[in-house]
Image 1 (cartoon, rainbow, N blue to C red):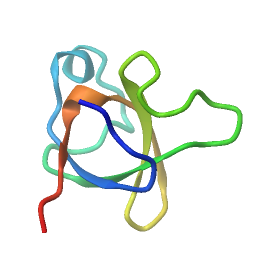
Image 2: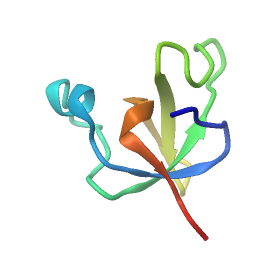
Image 3: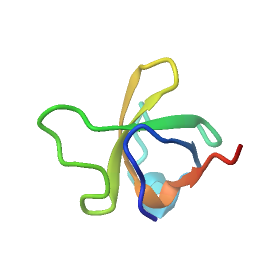
Length: 72
């Protein structure tokens, strides 16, 4: 799945995020926003992207397969 910078998604951990679980990995069902930090690869590079909370706290790198678009 392709993601867009600035869009919001629901996080449901795919295999890669389960296998490489870190302390800053979002909780299951968390709503996150895709960001593009300076000096980092753009979203969708190697099917990964950087995310932050809706409050603006940086979370880190997750697989794009773990994200589902928030439906209005």
